[in-house]
Figure 1 (cartoon, one colour):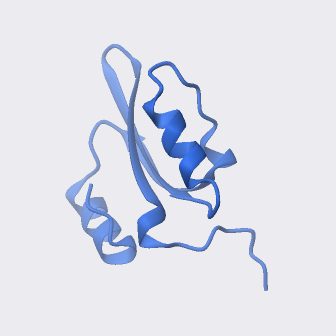
Figure 2 (cartoon, rainbow, N blue to C red):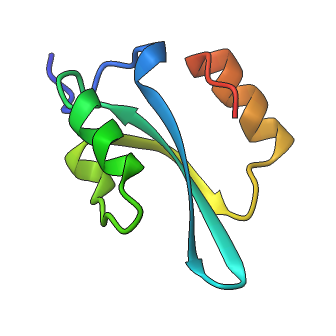
Length: 83
């Protein structure tokens, strides 16, 4: 059954921080789709790149500020991701 979700592979999890406002930071945890890793990583290296995250995979977590300790533990346990 195809659920439309990207299969989760530990090496495909990316933690992204951005600062959309001078006083506020946001974070995203993205499960990058197979075959899109190189393009996505190249875009991350560009200073002023605008990236529409859903074009590259599934957002598995997001929020303002810093992730909570509970979320960090969940990401470690579920995805093997250290944020």
